[in-house]
Length: 467
Ligand code: AMP
Ligand code: ZN
Image (cartoon, rainbow, N blue to C red; front, side, top):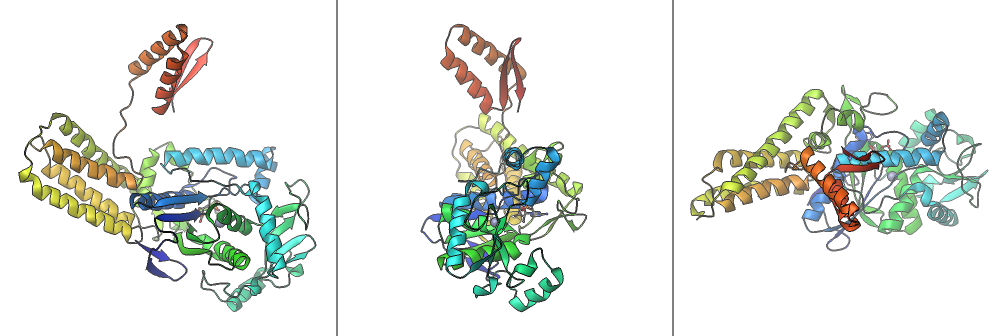
């Protein structure tokens, strides 16, 4: 597979550090609000990368953090009259619900910054010891000029950066040795959450979190580090400076960055106030449509959100699902027969499969991969019918379903349980409970839960709702 590496600004052949395995770290959200659809873009894109790598046979170790201590979380806690930890807990749970709706699989590990403080203190201590960091009045700063490769990811040189910073005049700039230096640890202010450290009661800076969590869960050198393009500078540049100065090894081999999702051709962001929440979309569309919309562009191309494009995504997705439903019906009536005359169709199917594969191999070109799926759908609609062999029908259907699945798109419609079926199962569960057959009663509850039906035992009897 070829991956565009921000570090070299070239598409490079992907070679893993360890044969057959891939380690991926994706910077996750700061949890002080419901996620917006801009935040959803890296989640969907890199979940698709993970799925594709797994489909290629790699064992993928996928780590994505939650930043659960931050100025914005503290501010939100003060507004809501609850603790910062409660704010984070609430929005992590909400984020997980959105991820599930978008069919973004949970990471192998979702570390949280507040649970990794010891590791951060250890890395900061090591950086001080090596002369890469220093303490001023309880604050620890990274000595940026001590890391000779600083700027290699964002392709900036230190003198350009100095020019920019002189005008900016950052908080606490006066006590820094150099305006390029950034914070690794800062003392608490009144009412803020804090942890004890050798330097002050305080909390870590944002950049050190990811360096530490990546090392703990994936090792000192990893294959792929990813996130939105706004993270290239300073976040990822600073992560490299910290991790490589601490370990003396290359931190990440490949750096992948998704372009932004815009709205009215302006960057969608919380600070600009021009964002749409994933929840807003969920009230109008199945979140599968949002996923399909995101994957209909290449991840390095900026995208503009519009109702028209969402409607196009909805229609496109429906076209695939309808074709698969039709193939399923045909499967039910098809006869097993000699399929010799169908060889051409199978050859064409295999060609489209190769095209699909090549698109994803080429820096995860999901847009072209979706076009190949559409061509498979066209082939199914024009060349497969009641007279086709059972084997052909199931091969075409299987191919469309598998190729969609690698993109996290569910092409097979879930058979929805009818209300009457649910109620029959609830009656059976009640009878089982009366007969003290609790194992069966639990089995029915779980079976319903798997299909998205939640039972509630109330005084008036059992009620149910769909998830
Ligand atoms: P944040 O919570 O702001 O740190 O963002 C979490 C992730 O979402 C980061 O990888 C950001 O780069 C990414 N992100 C934020 N806004 C957008 C956007 N409008 N389009 C694409 N990615 C975004
Ligand atoms: Zn990060």
